[in-house]
Image 1 (cartoon, rainbow, N blue to C red):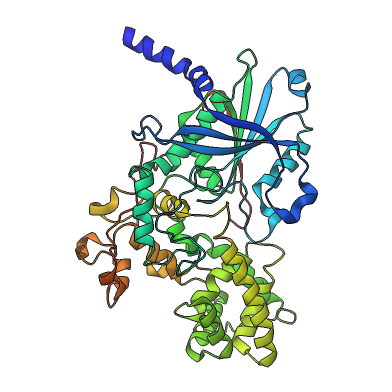
Image 2 (image 1 turned 45 degrees about the vertical axis):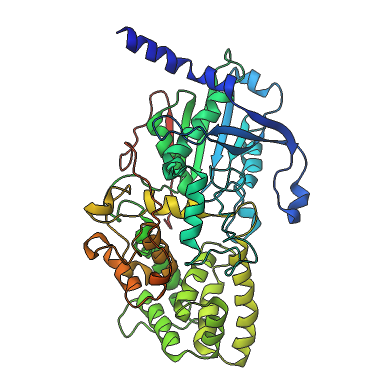
Length: 499
């Protein structure tokens, strides 16, 4: 009994212990964004800090190493929190996985940091607003393979890591993190937030109310924090929910079933084009099979077979195996942006027709789009290996019994999941197989995902490169479990009709 009382006292005082021991390099006056072309937003009214946290939180792993988290905040106007008699703060958590608070999709106004300004104004400057780069992303000890120089501008594939570079990059990163891939799991990221929230409590006489807002992958992180139920958090907001439990892609977001997840919205998008054939540049023929998505896939097949001049130029620019495998991820990015999604039918129509004017237009447009894609691999907000690590461990269905214990969900990537109109491309399958060690030729067929067999057969690279570096982690006790709403806390769920 005495032992239980002692443990309880330790837990009660954990926040105070963290506050006294947390090493904060800050808070320094800083601007809202790091983006030069948004200087009109960059009044120095924000505060930035670098906070040391353990590489390994208790119950996750064991290491004496520390890492740094980048935190940005805008404090409430003096007096407003006191008027409420409660000190309130809102934490905005980025999407991803592998994205920082400064990452964007195609245009700079998608930065989560810009959401700080909006929420701060909507809350009448009465609430402290925070963002933090998840560990391993952006400015928070990003996973980078400096020793191998695989991400250097002068490397064979530039800042994008090639398949032959990736195994050595993995070995480099594993050396840096003492082999603890689990230190960069969603479980560790959740404990980072609790560590920060408890450590930043400056006045224990004031009731602290913390609210967490997550979007996309950020909801998955918020859900994991709900399992841990820190007493300071009074509200959880999930915007675009990534569900955390269940084996069925109809009810759970598996990124390995990406095409299935976006099937309904993809169909609605092209049905709108079909309904407006007089003005939509893409002419769709549904007489063959009666399905608008199959009509689009037929156009992909036609472009792949004919390989006109436009398709040839696209292959030269992207170095993909087929034109459609280059178009799918490009369109997948465009369709997410309300201002740019109308380019999808126009580009596809030009690729199919490919007259001299089409060639000129496509050369300009595709080049600019590819520049955007390359920029996503550069700078402090680089979506590095962490995105793949979390993607394939927490949000992808795993392999059979011999390998399944490395991962957190059920079912596996299928070749069929790469053939949709907005598929992410076969590169994701390659990375999936490589990070699980499934490209190791010495691995038996029974221990390999069937989807990886095609990559092994006839591949010369598998014999020339060491592909046995496994970059996965085991699930924690909350994996594939639905979090209950903690006592004395509320939950808001927001989902749009396109999800």
